[in-house]
Amino acid sequence: MARYTDPVCRLCRREGEKLYLKGERCYSDKCAIVRKPVAPGQHGQSRKKVSEYGLQLRAKQKAKRTYGLMEKQFRSYFERAERMRGITGENLLQMLERRLDNTVYRLGFASSRAQARQFVRHGHILVDGKRVNIPSYLVDTNQTISVAQKSLDKMDHFKMVREEADKTVPEWLQVDFDKLEGIVSHLPARDEIDTPVEEHLIVELYSK
Image (cartoon, rainbow, N blue to C red; front, side, top):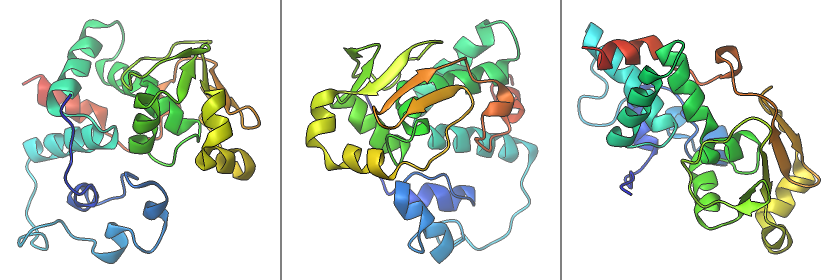
């Protein structure tokens, strides 16, 4: 599957805010937004009036880049959300949050969604005790997400997470850092999703 391979710090600079794509680096002075808080390119510092379409596009690009998706995959999520009952924008965000790579990140098992995606692909993550290596797998209520025992024993990263766990997790998740095991207590509601995305602008963009 296609994926973005260029420098991700450019994406944060383009959106004008931290998307937390580089894990611990985003919290340090090395963060691109801290060092150079302007859009990339020779016209990055120029100020332009943003049109209504521009606002809608930026909202879509921000969501797509935050969750690490390409355009075709993101559009597919939107079309599924549109067919579901309820509010399309909220359905879209809920599905993006339920992705296995995002869930692993939200549980604090990885420092970024990209790292979480790699852990899933390399078979370090179990869902209900079974190995799942598909980052786009959608978790459901009462499912248990855990780190494989062999990975716990061999990888220093997971040992560090278990020893230094001090992260809070969203209300729709419960986590046991001693076992590195989390449970989906319920599907995320809109007020439990802190991703700074104006989903109504995405709906407006795709509804044209």
